[in-house]
Length: 285
Image (tube, rainbow, N blue to C red):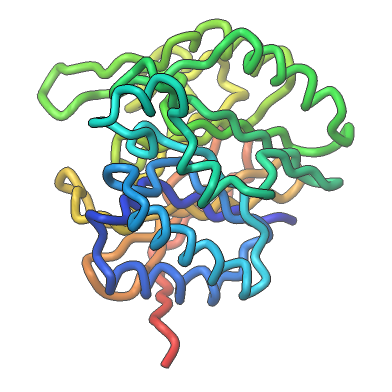
């Protein structure tokens, strides 16, 4: 069995310090096998914001956690057009990427992170043809029985917008990427960007989001630590993988300790009754 904590849209520079402490405490209490950070570590890609984000990641690593991190569009300078064009992820690379890998594999899970944030787009994301080819290349080298998981910041499927009836588009290159996902046997696609939690598996669009195949689970994370919550609480996802079974728990905070409730299972997962019991984790003294 493996557990993955997906935290996203930290937005250091527009963050709640108390919620950061509660997030750290929750992760220490849960002890996930892998922490995935699906982008937007900063609010405006300033050096000071990257330094705060880097300090948070380093504290997690000092606690013994393994991290896999991808950048978001807020990690690209918005008001520096030359840097945005020529070195869009320069500060991200210096402070965050460093020697951290965007690939993790063991006998049970194989996780690939792809940067969907680029300098030519302000808000929306894209995957290049080279990145899409890497989906097949990387997962071909994964252990045969490992659950395959792809991580981006921008979603690969259209999502409901903030207004009734509004639909936010998927990232550019999504159709080719989803075909590659299906061909590579990927079971989970994780993303952030929209600051709302959702889980979808329905190819017909009957759920809140759509997937290319009912065997592919599309999971969105909310904002873990920012005050830019868009009407939802701060949250992160805890993903439990036990052989072919997958369970998604959304952990939420209204400013205090994070608490959990199981929110999603694919239709082929174990059919145990969901529990309404809640667990919590608070900062260490």
